Image 1: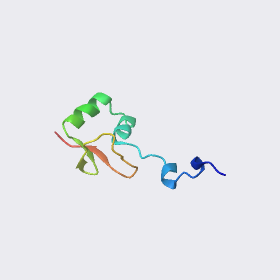
Image 2: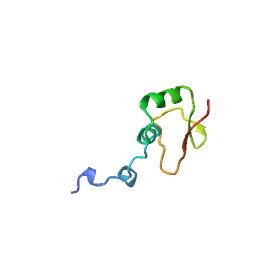
Image 3: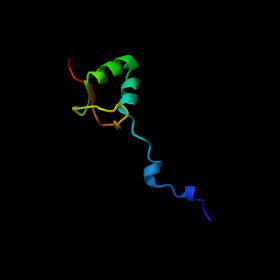
Image 4: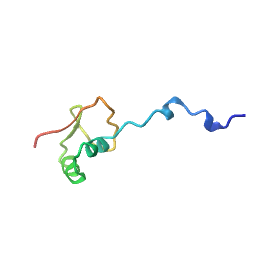
Length: 68
């Protein structure tokens, strides 16, 4: 009889989407600058203010900083 772990759903096999935080850090934004922009509510994902830096930001979405 196969083990229960042999029946992993397709959703569990999919790689997790990168987060807002991981994409911006990978792009070279320093953790301090990211925190500063986030506290000022200037981090945007597809034009919407980001409340949680750990929310998914899959490829194809656009991350920007709003002007001060």
